[in-house]
Image (cartoon, rainbow, N blue to C red; front, side, top):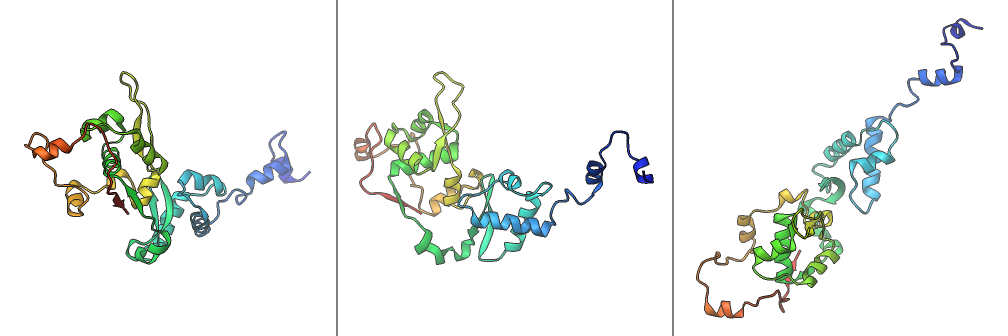
Length: 232
């Protein structure tokens, strides 16, 4: 028996003890290597990844948040950027050169005015119930409008309201944020920006006198416009 054996605690397994004393056994890879891992995952994935998802794929002891920050700094000013999409991360074409990819990736979506207004109300007032959407718009919302936005994966059903009837609520999805290059719903443009871009009609405020023709034309329910509004 060696002096080293004499120093062991009673009943200790020499091999197990040696493994625990090995300082490099569970060492995390260097941060530069962790950055490469994150880069590989974001490059290959078709959907944005959360830090938790990245952490479960990386070796024990890795810090995906620091690795993402390093990678984001590495790609700053380049043709591809590391961007946050909701609570996840993705590689996306830099905005100033995105016009080069229009023919390949830009998909034209045509929505009725009713669908655009419904989507905007949900985005700005989420979580919003169907009754709240109808109250804001002043007309009933057709089921087809909601179904269309659900099929596009731009809205999804949220939690039920703790009110009589427990109505479902609607919220925008990460696919919506990703399509419009938004980190979160807080990045939505203000009313002034929407009017300047021509995306918000300069309508009279409620209570102001309206033309009789406009009043007569307004129906009690939502109708799909014959002319479609184009969203980009």
